[in-house]
Length: 375
Image (cartoon, rainbow, N blue to C red; front, side):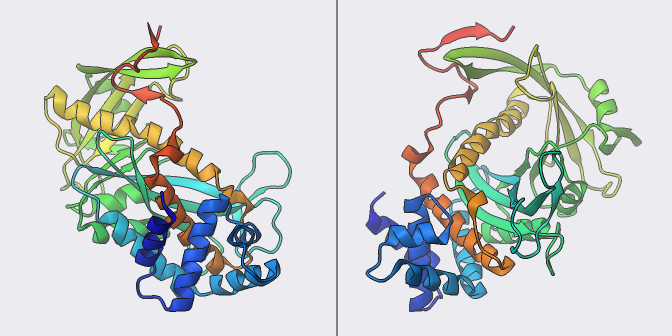
């Protein structure tokens, strides 16, 4: 991408800001993009201004304290990204941790669990919304939101608030998808209460659902559900394309908390012998109307499963910036920095050459590869 194009993008996401703040946004986004770093000293070094390095660092740090800049940039990016969302766009929710195990001065660090190695894990939880059209491997980030249980006016409620903001920006378009292996029951209830909200959520075996006026767990319904429809997936390992057979079916269900909302439980099974997935089965709870039609079900299943590749590509993109090296003490500054970081990721995602992670997953065989059955 040309520098002129990046400058135009920075002007767009700086709408409503003054000249000083707009220059700061341009310097930060271009600096993060060029240095592949979120450390202010690395950004100051790549800017290479005709002043002492510490003076540039001080200027960036001072401007980072302006919370209005971060808020306005996040809003502008959301408007730009959501303008490309249509009814066939998948809005993927990704959750991950910003771990700062050894940080001492960062504000509102909260526990992230203990892995038994060194001090307990501390840091912040992050939720990101990524847009990708069905049938495409291209994507563009929309928003990134941190939260901490120890920060005022922060917590798990940030996720529903972020979803509501995205839905307003898209005009209700798009299909919300969560592939997390640890689904949040509160998220399901938040989405289910809106009759116009479309979603596909991965569920645990213990999810409680109503089927034919009786309440069952997800695992009990999976045993009852026949899976007469099938498709073949292709996973690429070590230059060998393995054909993986998956079959699926559905049951009409309802939630005990919202019995008037018709939903569908889509059960996806795999013929596996070793770890393509951690589980040989997915339970997908969706608001999309299902019927006894292979095309209808396979479109939903493929839309869900193919997001694995986008998740991996997005993680590879994020890892280039070494987000865990971020060094800001105040939580408000962190939120502003993450808003600018998301803008840099959005710009990088538009450059397909930066996202070449290699072929891995497809519903058609990978060309010029040896093909073998999974078994």
